Amino acid sequence: MRMENPAPENLDLILAALGDPARRRAVEFLKDGPRRAGEIADAAGMSGPAMSRHLRVLRKTRLIAEERVEEDARIKLYRLERAPFAALSGWLEEVSAFWGDNLQALKAHAESVVQEEKGAGKSPPARIARRSRP
Amino acid sequence: MRMENPAPENLDLILAALGDPARRRAVEFLKDGPRRAGEIADAAGMSGPAMSRHLRVLRKTRLIAEERVEEDARIKLYRLERAPFAALSGWLEEVSAFWGDNLQALKAHAESVVQEEKGAGKSPPARIARRSRP
DNA sequence: ATATTATTTAACGTATGCGTTAAATAATAA
DNA sequence: TTATTATTTAACGCATACGTTAAATAATAT
Image (cartoon, rainbow over all chains, first blue to last red):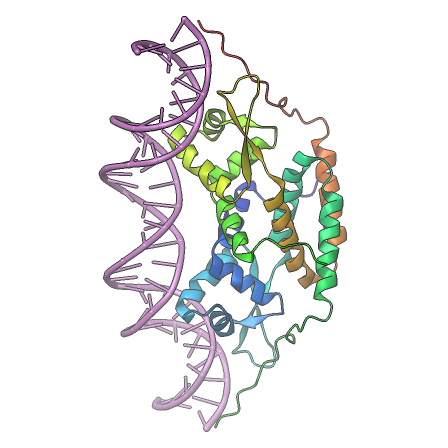
């Protein structure tokens, strides 16, 4: 049997979602770990409402998901979700078949990136500062 | 030394280009080999002018390139270009680092796709019918 | 209950993108 | 040259996406 592929039309939505610079910035920001909506908006340099709508788009395509923090139920974090990225990778591989191998090249590139990342000041994974009333 | 990365803002253009269904259909159609603008338009079920503008977008991001046929200089074919897809794959790998490896999973998926493709009626690689005047 | 903080939804204006038809270019063929 | 076919550009109308500010929700904390 065969793994259930995400419907192909979803790829259009995924690509369109990632096609907006603000949303791509949001995704890149979330690479460092789950973050709150406000933080993401700040990181992308735009208002909360604007980012909120972008997050809705990303949520709809399941590129991100929300998670609750048990320490402080008030706080909602967004994190990257694996599946759509995997689907996109799969599609890219399909297209890449056009040139023959390419699998080797991709693997090589990926590893060079990993190499670069080693020791490249990535910020710590979302510490939530519990607000102590002033 | 390090391989020259395509400027990151190009990724936005690449993703936006692929984000349009018509353009993605065009790309998928070109997986089978170089084709003429008109064929692509037909395959996508839209007028020539409409597809022409989409092709311009794809050309601008270098997702496709044109090639001339020496047999018949009149005919211009479009074909997929490797680099932008590789850049996108690289970016996806970067994002995927969020979940740890994933490299294995991707490779596995790619191979399963290759497996599926084996013997799945792909049309022949762009035979140009030289027009014999009626 | 009332206040505080975070996030989402509503309303608005602007801009950009898309498809169509009609006209302009390009490149031969007769 | 003139005609023919393929493709691109121009002009138009329409819809949708984006960002902003202001108002509405949610969920505590006091």
